[in-house]
Each structure stands twice: as structure tokens, then as C-alpha cells.
Length: 104
Image 1 (cartoon, helix red, strand yellow):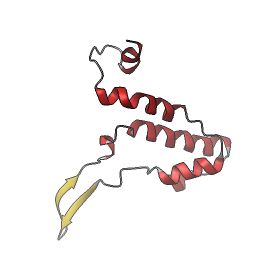
Image 2: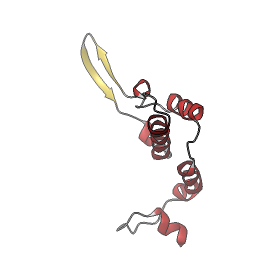
Image 3: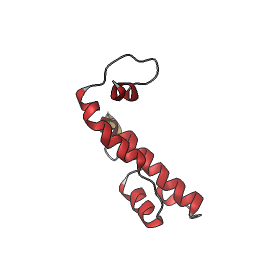
Image 4: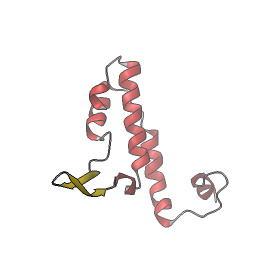
């Protein structure tokens, strides 16, 4: 029951899915990664994109035919990757004093 309560947001009474239970340890592991090395932080910022690379407008003769929405949110670990990238950017900016505009 302790695993269930840690997966639920306050006020929600829905039991987590089987996938949520399987991914919970992996999510905790990603959330626990500490960025303490500038080279590792730069690597993370290069490897984790700032925005979804799949999102785009399909145009023909200057007219938008359709829009492909960002598919990154379909990734069950999306929030953990975004958080890890943010921690890496903060480390580079705050601890190393680097200009992180190249990664944005």
C-alpha cells in the first residue's frame, strides 16, 4: 500500500496502473541523479532536447496541411528527462557560471 500512496497525487483515489508500478523505481532513480560534473551536465544538455524534435507543421505551397503534435509526452519518463536536463542547466549556470543560452 505504501507504493500506491507514493504514486498518487493528493486528492486522487485511483490505483496506479501496472506500467506505473513497473516504472516507479526507474523514475525514482532518474529523479535521484545529482549533477555534480560540468562535462556530464553539458552532455545531458546536448543529449536531452529542449523541445520535442517530432513536433512540426507539414506545409505545401506555403499552406499548413496539418500539425504533428509533440510526441515526447507519450514517453513515460518524459518528466524525469526534463527534470534532469533542468538540473544540468542549473548546475552549469549557478555552479560553473556558464552561459547556457547555447542549450536553449
